[in-house]
Length: 376
Ligand code: NAP
Ligand code: ZN
Image 1 (tube, rainbow, N blue to C red):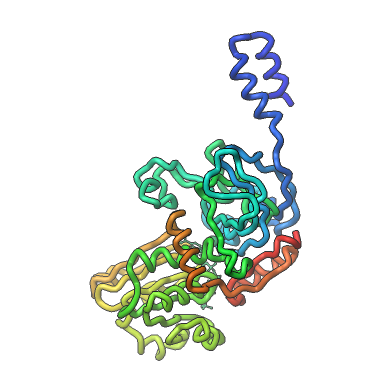
Image 2: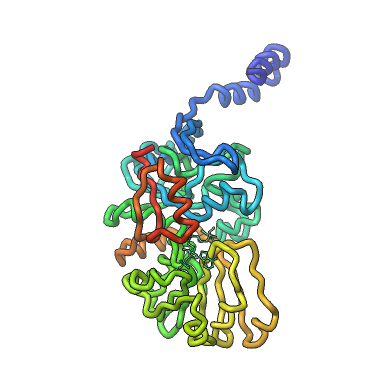
């Protein structure tokens, strides 16, 4: 209100400021979109209902009525401040699918009524070398994340545990009508995060690929590894997941708590896709790589600790990979539609979100929780 009065004062006393002032007043009076969501108010509190506002649909924006949102381990890391002090209240969620309810006047590629998706990114500078090379996730000016970030106007972003989202069209994805919609949601993060590195390192026929951790990311890594023609082994701490891993298409299953099973696969893998969310013994996993093998880290434990001998005794590499660019995310979604690949999910009511986080932390999810946003 103070700012609003100030604008009028400026208007009457400095006529030359008319144009600037009218723009500001228009902004202050702009209709915002009333949105229902679930938020954590602090890192210590559970998620609970919270209403907030989103910007009105601008000329280049798309508004999506959200139907389903996947639950990523990154949501849990972020509401608990595992990575850095977060922005609270925090509405998590970056595996978003739903129907377009409004498009701005200049939107070219989307129409009202179509299915659409949003992943981890909602903006980037669009002009740096990485953005120009379709690597917006590595934007040199810093990408804008779907939640727990300030957008390029300095307004906090809120994610998909909510009933509506407004995103500029360059960051909206086309979603096939052919696939189960709820099971498609996790492709927007777990899907692209595993698809992108496997494509980058050209993993396929003739390669032995190990996937560490059979959770949300891991089970998508298995599906893509198999679809690309690799011989896939799951390295898991949970013996109980063996049968399900084989159903996902994995050729072999190793229980990493069993020293004899681990010993039997030493120096055998061309690639290891490591999706583990907690600290673990990297030296042991690196010892399973062949000479010149690469461990690709996509999980986010607190550190990657490895002894130099583990790498130089076999010219081995540890690499990292973050989500994927928008063009590649669309390519992945189209690949999934063509090959009938979706996530294996457990659909939940939003009121069960805290219990679902507890189960996810214990590795007790087959393999992704997805929130039915109709329960919001
Ligand atoms: P998730 O569903 O919880 O799966 C993680 C799996 O890791 C668990 O199911 C478990 O599988 C295994 N695991 C857990 N604790 C372990 C331990 N102490 N030692 C060995 N294995 C352990 O999590 P998610 O959603 O797939 O996410 C995994 C990680 O990727 C998170 O850190 C997340 O933040 C990160 N992430 C990164 C990106 C990126 O851009 N790079 C994108 C999304 C997510 P088993 O029961 O089979 O052992
Ligand atoms: Zn994620």
